[in-house]
Length: 115
Image 1 (cartoon, rainbow, N blue to C red):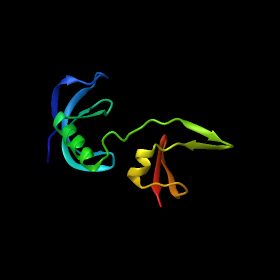
Image 2 (image 1 turned 90 degrees about the horizontal axis):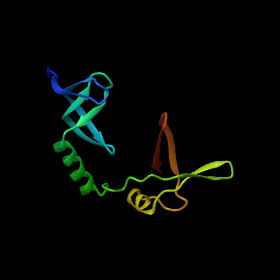
Image 3 (image 1 turned 45 degrees about the vertical axis):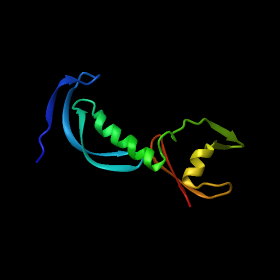
Image 4 (image 1 turned 180 degrees about the vertical axis):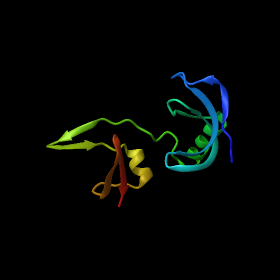
C-alpha cells in the first residue's frame, strides 16, 4: 500500500497538498502510474516537470504536439458548425464529406470519431 506524503506547501485554494501515485492520461494517451501532487481540499492535480517532459516528448513523437486549437462555433441555418483546422483533419484522416460519430461525454465535453 502506498502512503500519501503531505507536502510543505499549500494549493492556491489554501488546501493541503499531498504527494501520491495516480494514473496520468493526457491527449488520450495513458502514461501509467506517476507521482503527482493533489490538493486535499479542491482535488486539483499537478504533475512534476519530469512527467510533463515525458508527456511532451511522447506527444512530439506521435505528432500531437501543437495540434490543440481553439475554434469558434458558427451557425448554418439552425445548426451549429465546428470548423476543423486542416492540420487536425489531416492528422486524424478526416476528409470532406466523411462521416463522423458525435457523442456528448459530459457537460462541456464532446467526443468525435471518424467512421
